[in-house]
Image (cartoon, rainbow, N blue to C red; front, side):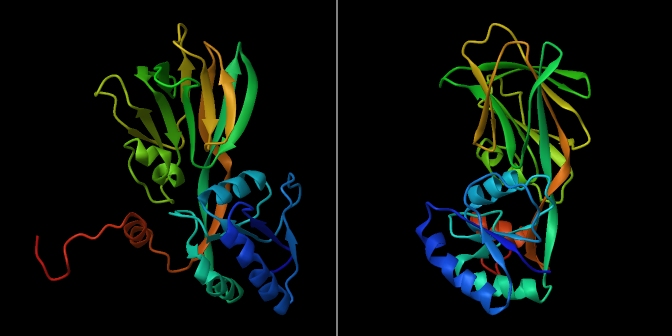
Length: 279
């Protein structure tokens, strides 16, 4: 493969800073060249990017590497780490598996988001986890007319509305009552945030569908589109937020024997009954 490998370390994580020299020594020992990301936009592809941080570092790296066909190997020095299959103490094992072709990557669905205003596209971007429409101000409901494939599902009155990928099903969507989906699921999730009506429930749709959040008039506060908890764009009444699955994917490396449900059980601390005890 290999070289140059792009190293992307979260500068706010002390453990990432202490781990970085060890990884550089490993790469040097194996005659693998590398470049350290300096925070600037990335304009060329790499055979591999290694992130040192948490899921936020993976998401930031994935957004910077969008369209460059560069897979990511994530070393988790954060907290939960659903996108980072390897713990900080497993970095050497991860790189050894990479050199021995014992890793595979999964293609993660991305969201493509466009905002249409007066029949003109005024904004476009992608999201790895989710797109959220909510209020700038707290304790204000939004009024969003939801359509899927031009079929009107009615008006959502809630604190906000989430469209999430299968990857994002373990992020903000989950905390708002959305379902968990394995990363290979080719579906999108719609989750109202604290809906006014209990009849408004999370919805899973095929990723081939076109989802539109129609921003209605007479909003009680200014609305904003938030992508992956970072990118923001202010919305106006009558805007259309058009959401589809993007043609590009995010490539994430993991063990070739990766078992998602075991990972889920480990990350969420699911215990169940002790072995040998019947239900």
